[in-house]
Image (cartoon, each protein chain N blue to C red):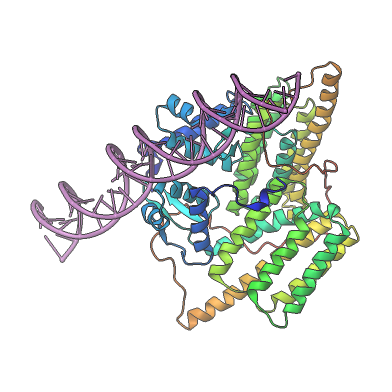
Length: 261
Length: 261
DNA sequence: TGTGGTGAGATCGTATATTATTTCGTACAC
DNA sequence: GTGTACGAAATAATATACGATCTCACCACA
């Protein structure tokens, strides 16, 4: 175990190869939502048999990146307009808790690193670049929840971010103006951590940080969409009919739960 | 979807067969933690080839019921003593939120059903049976979170309960005396729902309900274990050395976050 | 012209066969 | 007596082959 870091840990299995292959393509949108993942084709491209490809696809299915139907096949998951919303909401819950639970284990060094990254974020506002902003943003939050002592929750947070990455690239760029607020909220969260604020207060600060981002997106999205609709540019309502498990339609509003403190 | 209940949806695939086969045996502890799941053997018992068995095991791995190591094989997941703790903690977070988010959509009929079940729970205290109590308890909570409009979160709650079922059967029965408290807390939660209490208040009531159960178990467990240790009956410390991904050891205490209201 | 049956092609599901890796026992050297 | 090297058995990983199922276009018939 001590030297397993050398990385040349034999060859990566062909399943892993296929998994990485497909996942990469989904994330950089070479495989767009609705794209059919045909076992034989992918196997051919990779020079392997269908068995490992099959396994890779089932793993991606478990992560929600692809949809699968018996005897029919897999396709890259459709981006339900609600998907971003739902993912952010879920993330707000688990990440909020993870951040609060992680805080007591943060070292002063961690805090300093987080502050440094937030400074970079502030800096980048001048020559704004959505891609690097997103990366730095993840780095920042990673420091905040990485010490979460509950591995399940940490895993859920990781999955949430992964899902988000897959969605974000393919659907939209940033909401203008939100970045500045975001940096300010980061600073607020760091202050709470530093003065060892109440866990619940911290949890809700982190939760609301995410929900506020979501709301900004929803508002921006609505505005943009109606503008597009007026201009006759309404975006594609799903290429083909996909028999995906129905989502409940009932949803009231963006459900911001404000701090109680 | 409306008639998918007929179930005779052609033949269940052999993967599903194998999946159900293994999962059942894990849940009723015919396969105990540490038991090695050999592909060929299981395939033989089922009269199928190894391929579907392999897939079933990978699915079970994704759910955390089995541990898998490359080129070595799978075994039923060891019950990390922390596993129950971690699962309950995670569940407290997502179920608490799901309950609060579901509440606005509950009908008076739902409330009545929930009350009826809680009455049954209260009734069963006289002739206490852990198994049926657990079942009714799940029925009760299911009504509370079933309308949760966020399908991800609902899924997480379902998984949490599934995991719990796998753990609970094989490790312990109930904490004596906790059942009565539990019924009272259920009533409290129902009252909050009925008078349309604040979402946060409801969320924390549900969360704390679960955390209190966890704490009762931990306290009881500590007492029992030290008693057993004294009596020289200390339970098995893992059959064989298992190279399982390390869990972080740092953990302070049972982390009850009390209501702010 | 519209509707329902039918067959070919595509693709998945699974069985069988082959290869690669690990594990464990045994023998040999020190 | 202890440690290491070698090899055989067990088992997972992958390839190949075949049967099962779905999709879709085409055609007969009302």
